[in-house]
Image (cartoon, rainbow, N blue to C red; front, side, top):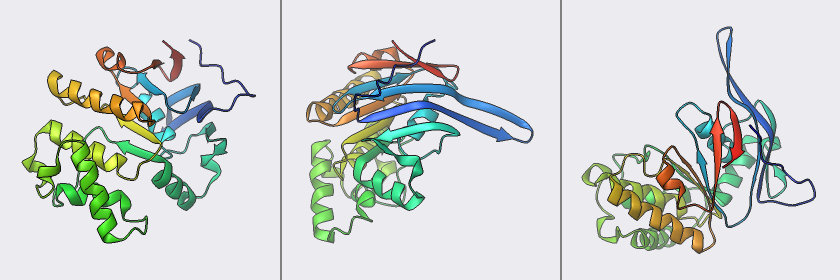
Amino acid sequence: MNNQTVEPDVQHLIEVRQVGKDYHSGESTVQAIKEMSLYIDDGEFVSIMGQSGSGKSTLLSILGGLNHPTRGRMLLDTLDIYKLTSEQRADLRSEYIGVIFQSFQLIPYLTVLENVKLPMAITGKKAKIQDKMARDVLDRVGLANKADRLPDQLSGGEQERVAIARAIVNKPPILLADEPTGNLDSTTADEIMNLLKELNKEGQTIIMVTHNPEACKHSSRTIMVKDGFCYEN
């Protein structure tokens, strides 16, 4: 099972170089990622596909600057992000990376608008500007009329759209999506995939984790993950 070849003289938006991730429990060690090398270029829509436990969600968290690898390097625009301090990495994430979490992770006691505004809390933007940006992005995902609702007053598909709106409100160049259609019916899933494709056409780099071969058809290429390794499909 072969990793992608990362060409040393070619600059890519993202490069994963011989990354591994171990988890320790007592005296036992589990290798969630044994060794993965891959690259992703600016403007791509890439699927990372594999079964549960294959290491794909661990890989996504490493790509998002959220999970320090045990070994190897993760480069973003040639910057080794795990050599940064945690504060520097948090600043980089807020500027470069939006994340759509598998279980939405919406705050239940905040309105839709307030949930979308959360990533802007550390940007220093004025309240009026934050409000306008959040409302604009809610309009973009078709939820302008539900800004004052609470998450439990929305359908699953609408909650997914709020999660997408929150992820893109700061206009990050990279969007990570963890099983964005996993909890949705097929019609709603198609709507979400079409929205992601629109964002990609507008220049956003999208990296999507999925176990669904149908979802992969929407991306430009697929990286398969199995038993802690990855290879190009």
